[in-house]
Length: 482
Image (cartoon, rainbow, N blue to C red; front, side):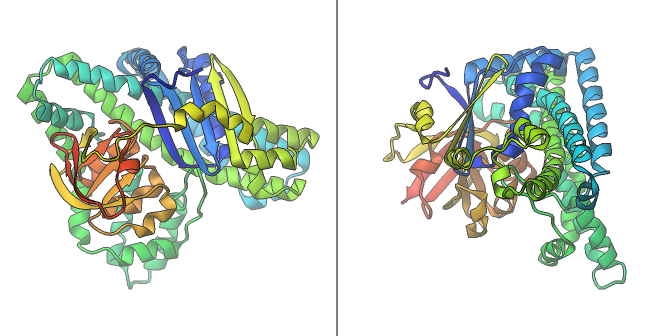
């Protein structure tokens, strides 16, 4: 069992339902070691009501990540193979999903429907199998790049800045691509083509607000409302379009200033790509979540089971339900809604549910805090303007993003795509968990605002309305006024 007294790598707590993340855990146990040799370190993944948390021992996970990064990202042959594998599995998944619709699934007899779900599940698990490569590799690549840079840069502020610039993705994220496409439609407002163009946009990006918690099929009016509130369109278009060039120029400047050797440059370039790849993969996951919902809704009708309850089934249990009509008892579903634990160790997955099993993770829920401390530290993943002052806004769930006000300091356990609207309003971001490859790191760089991650205690020590100073030059948060 994972030792709670050791340094832990924690992802969460964040909103989620078991079905949307279950394929990830199956792929960790079966597909990653089968096809890509190295195992993920031991994992405790638990759900307390609608919050999910993923825990590993940091040292073991980083070590696995370093092996992965060297074999599949840094090694040229491995890099070529894994990219080709990913594109092949992604194309197969996308081709199959093109056939799936609510009407198509409802037209199938029970046997054909079961075959359709089984086929989709197999393709999706293969996608996850190769899609895990950059995620695990990035955890090791981060440490490898830090070690390489430390040989050239001694000053903390310069080290932070160089690390941020070298690891920044060179390509636009899918959020930036959507924003850019939307901004370019502004000039068509009031024309005959506008409604058709907005319909096309919604068909292309209907999934953009999906998550591991809920799925939203966005319609044209949603995007029209956002577009109507945007000003200075041309400057925003130019800013986004110029971002890749700016990042490349920043990297060249760092390389020249510190006379980095070829190995360090290669490490940085491959890590930068892998960070972008991990984020780009989310697009396909959020689209796949839409299809999960289509299958669940059809299963709910055929088996007369609540759609909400089906989101607490495991994929293998859905197959059994379809083939043998074996249902999960109402008592078990009730237990799962309160607590679920998934324990992964050496290719084995063990599932436990109910409040009695919650005692197994009790050591990980107890944190000793110095709530009287006026300062805290974190890892700088985006320097932005360096230092900002602002009022704190604690968001423990993205369902409260509407509470965020322009210019506030966003404080969260970690961020995820559902936080994007709040992040765009924030003057700076502080999280309990995360690293240079985290969602908060990627988005804060895109927004050009300061971001500190891995504070461990921000959401416990800070309160809504606290006036704080975020110093991204030195990785410090100072409470100015409670």
